[in-house]
Image (cartoon, rainbow, N blue to C red; front, side):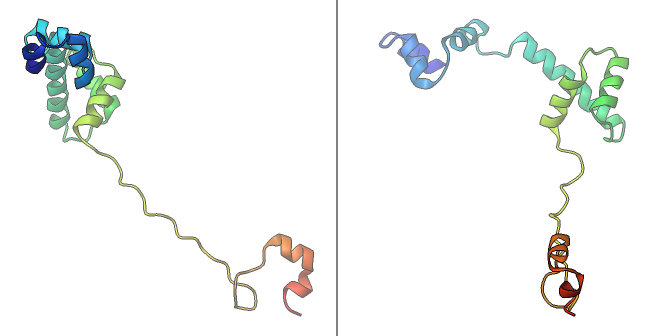
Length: 132
């Protein structure tokens, strides 16, 4: 943002924002706030800290639903989706993915090769499928 401030006498703000990949509204909002965080950002950070404190007090086992209930009991007004979003960004919990399943191959009645499916047994007849 300081670069845009320094170069806006040579080039237009619109062109500088486009080249740097910044929207004009974000540039002017940043200037209005003088580079500091917005009030909403500070409030969200405070509530996220309160959520982490509550989660730590309950042995770090509460999920989003229980944590939402606990925060409401403490007087905060986050809904479950907001708590889950903060939860996902702060820590990755849950069951690890299961290993891939092995494909179990059937063995034919004669002990060699893959077994015949129902359709093949029906088509060949039971006696021929059994090798008799």
